[in-house]
Amino acid sequence: MDFADVVRRSLEAGETPDHVAQALLDEHHLLPISAIKALRSGSSMTPAEVKDVIQRNLAPARWAAAEPLWEMIAPTDTE
Image 1 (cartoon, rainbow, N blue to C red):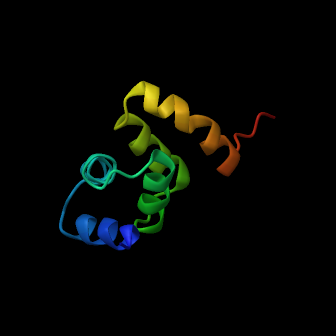
Image 2 (cartoon, rainbow, N blue to C red):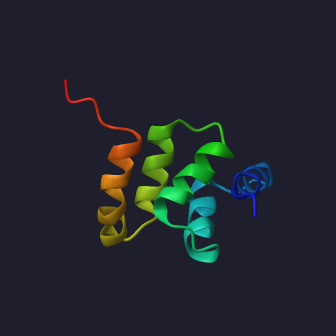
Image 3 (cartoon, one colour):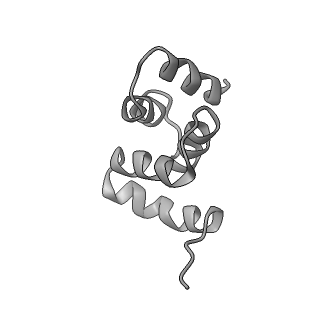
């Protein structure tokens, strides 16, 4: 299934990014990093915006597991 297309169609139908994130995580059972990738690919949102949407739609324990992977994908500039 092309989840970027699912995101695109859902947003075009008027669904909010939060609703789309919840669907990716709960209905489609995507892992957090896969949901970030789908939401980023199917929308015009920035990586930081997508991260925030996914993070606020996850239980803290699930985000804690995904955070190290996010840092590998988009490291935070510490300088």
